[in-house]
Every structure is written in C-alpha cells, then in structure tokens.
Length: 121
Image (tube, rainbow, N blue to C red; front, side, top):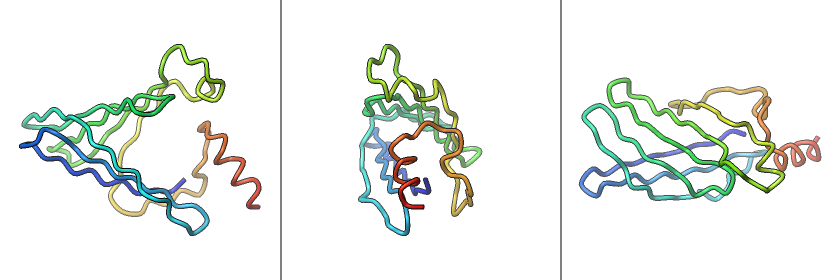
C-alpha cells in the first residue's frame, strides 16, 4: 500500500520522531506519529520500534549513504493467528520520492488490506 514516512531526529534530545501516512483509493489516512529514543553515531542514527503487537522494527539512518534501512521481525511466541501468518522477517529501504509499485500487496501477509482491495474491485 503506498505510503509516506517522515523521520526527524534531534541529537540534543536523543530521539527520533516518525510520522507515517498511507494512501488507498485516493484517500490519505490520518498520520501516526511516534517518538523513539535514538542512538547517534558519527555515521548513523538508529532506533527500535516495539509498539506494534505483531512485529518489532529496527531502523537505521545511514548518514554516509544518505539512506534509511529498516528490518521488521515478527515477535516470537505470538498466539494471535493473524500475527502468526506474518513473514518472519522483512528488510526495507525508505525511498526518496514516488516509487511506482503495481502490486503493492505483493507476497506480503496483509489480510485486512487484501479484503478491502478485493471488495473495491
């Protein structure tokens, strides 16, 4: 599903603020805004997001490559059936600008989005 994410980090406060909005059928969702404690190094800024019920995210902003990398890992020992069907691990790169994706659902397990997409046909 197309989306936009903005990450702003403040070394003096030791944190990063992440704002994300998704687009579907011409509508933009209300953005979610989260604040994370961050680690600052000369070549990178990193933080972890453990808020989601099913997954844990590790985010790294590489200052030399000027890129953002993230890894989503499914949390262990989940009893929730939906969570159990998620991929064990996904590696992502945050792009700059619009990147066309003709199959946004791909092979990823996103059951509610698939249902909505099916009904909208």
